[in-house]
Image (cartoon, rainbow, N blue to C red):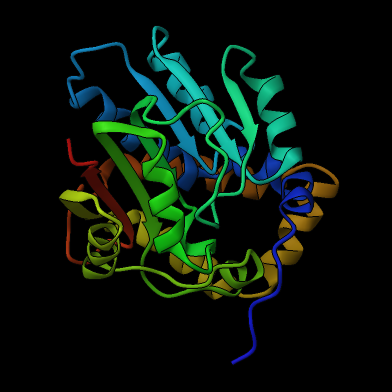
Length: 255
């Protein structure tokens, strides 16, 4: 099988930053991550490292919910970092490549009480090395929250560079081999996130054209109404169900 093409993340964020910010699935994940951090009852000041911080949407959302926390974002794309710095000037963002074992530490070794890696591992050729590099930024006993897609892969997923999707056993095994102690793996999103994903799958490659057209102009009225509808419906998703297509794992770096 030929190697997957090299991802161009600068071009990705130039083209899709606005669409990602409107994505109801992204907002659903951000709410879940916020809830898990708030439930973690950290006894010291919270320091959050967003691994693969994109254009800064997650840190922007968490900064509103946790105004006393400190934030750092690590992102491969210079374009993503530039957008994120404008969006959240109070946070620190670094251009970082965690796809090899010698990733730069930026003076952040064992800095974070919490690390988040949301919708990143599916893009990575060697997620084991990536998670091992992630552990360097997390303090002993620190909490890691991972979200990855489950369920079938769509044409749009492949267009965005997805290498694989995950299930409960696959993400648990990957985290354990990376040296983390897994506390919980949830399959969330049933039924309405699954329905959203089915619309993406059924739309096929036409969705790529739709998003490109919206990027060139503005989202259509139908697209805007559809995204608002799903945002409302996602409130009723089950947090954990064998049928859920959004995978969330909670793990700790051993003390």
